[in-house]
Image (tube, rainbow, N blue to C red; front, side, top):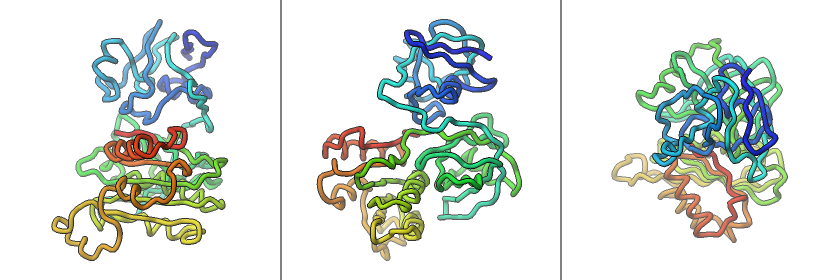
Length: 336
């Protein structure tokens, strides 16, 4: 197996056949910086000092024009063709790999509709489902060359159950592949990944802010928090009343009303949404709802955020720039 050495450090690790540089690093417990694992965010950038790598995507969105001029690569999109010497900023923020990701066959158990365009998919592995609340897995689906990143909505369990709430994208290849799965079909599951996992040891109250298909990891965090004495504020932004679905999940959890509250908001005006006239919840963009609804100084909370990039950017601006929340108290994985 190829050996990958990080220049200027004592770090080196082997890459199993087919593993990207990022996967090999994480499986070895090396805290390589990353977020999305699929070439979109650009967090896992590095340069090759010696050796060659096979590039999976010629033009990944995570590389800027300047990155390309400087010959930077994405660790999640490169497979070592032999021994490599690389330069990367490893563990500069004290990061760690809490659970080493592993590959496993996963059997499709079933699916159910959550809304008109969101579906809950259930898979089972032979071994325990080991992950932290808020993490995601890479699913290799039939007919697709690239794995897709989907966040778990359940919590770790010995039964090997992995549950995902996924938006159905019209004409999307991933949505099409998921929709054709038959009960008993086997796919490849690789995980867990992600750094926006629940910090159990932090005593601050928890705030989950989700938008659209970012619901799944926030549900996982809420479900885990329900087994503790943490107070939790759950915010979910939807486009229309028909998209609002988080309250049905959160209301089932232990501690709801006593320690947990759920605030949903829709952003589409009533003249464009026939169901909005009967809507009893908040209206507006979810970051604006959080700004006016969440009480007290914001730096008294621990924040977890998941959703479309524009929503995440707006929430980060609110929390860090406007309300002075330390970045160490804001957790998110950026997907595009």
